[in-house]
Amino acid sequence: MTSAVPSDDSTSTTQADITAEIEEIEAAYQRSGVEETQPRRDYPPYRSTALRHPTKDLHHADPETIERWAPCFGTRDVDPLEADLTIQSTGEPIGERTVVTGRVVDGEGRPVRHQLVEIWQANAGGRYIHKRDQHPAPLDPNFTGVGRCLTDSDGVYRFQTIKPGPYPWRNHHNAWRPAHIHFSLFGTDFTQRMVTQMYFPGDPLFALDPIYQSVTDAKARERLVATYDHGLTSHEWALGYRWDIVLTGSSRTYMEPEDDASDRGDA
Amino acid sequence: MSTLTPTPGQTVGPFFHFALPYAGDRELVSPGTPGAVQLHGTVYDGAGAPISDALVEIWQAAPDGAVVARAGSLCRDGATFTGFGRAPTRRDGTYSFWTLVPGPTEEGAAAFFAVTVLARGLTNRLFTRAYVPGDTSVLAADRLLASVEDDRRATLLAVEDEQGLRFDIRLQGDDETVFLQFPGH
Image (cartoon, rainbow over all chains, first blue to last red; front, top):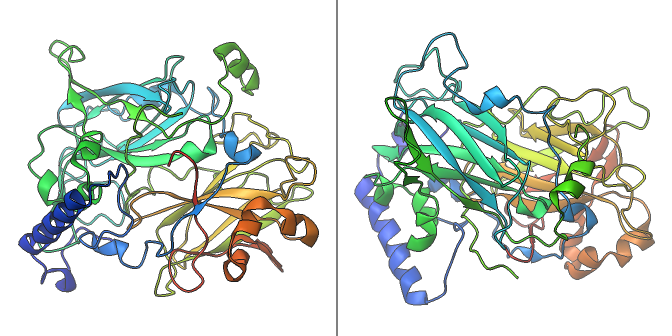
């Protein structure tokens, strides 16, 4: 189930079947009265979870020294130009030029400073530069869909990119993913490591997508959706979206930026 | 304590290979470095099949137990040990790192690699630990290992073999790896 072309074994399940499963799980969740904030690891409508979710409860652990620190990234690691996905080739990529920006904070609202943010995405036609993506949509010779940046001293990241298109996948017959950008994040503690996806507001595919819906709580799902912000939109240039990210609570003693700088090999 | 609700995680999906791996990602040290060891293993699904599209990351102390907190993991200079590595699994589900054996970060503590696992079909990242085999009394005194059922403890221990240290990861099944939940998760 790695390519985007429907296979024989996935055509027997319809979108109606998947939607019914999604709605049944959500109804049961609402009856339970217990709030969930993260995706379910065992989420049958997303078929690939079947053999890949741990069946035993996660084991409680108190973070030890190494887990209360996180890998450190600096100006040696990331070129500031990597935050602009529209200038990686000689020509302009096709699609809606888009700015995505926001703040990365920990559970207490403190900015995650000078930390690595990595993104990857499909192009405007819904095609990834990946050999396993066989969706017959055009590749864009001027777009790789890969970006990186470091957050600033206030925890702010900012990318300029092209709005990705929705694309088909092989979960079931006529399955389409809502447009999204993959985000990879680090915090001040290794226990805050997170990989997630950012979505665009008002996508008609939300209700149909078992990956988005693997987060059973509607309020929690909303936290994955960026907000259109006309204040970020620039005249005759690009549309702006804001998406703030909250990592799990930090347990390490808060460090002032001055102290932080002394930890950085390339500071 | 936490006042904000964390953003949900989502699967890394099948298409991260053109973005997350980078040159030198799995070589925390060059293979010829004195003390270099291979940490390697296979990631398996619940049917016992190797997973060819997983991503394993490690974060570790230096051999003297120091947490190095040095930049340079994405652009290794051949001299700075940063403690972070990233390895996608291969077609046969195997992964490997060239690294140094971490030391205990505190007197008398057991040494381990902090590990995260990401994959298509895994809706959120998983955390685990790969303990360095050796001093059985130190391992026996470790709080986490002591809190795990006897028949599952071995899933957290790397095993010495001819290649170095082997740490297989099983997402599901009878010998499912012990995955960790930290406070606030």
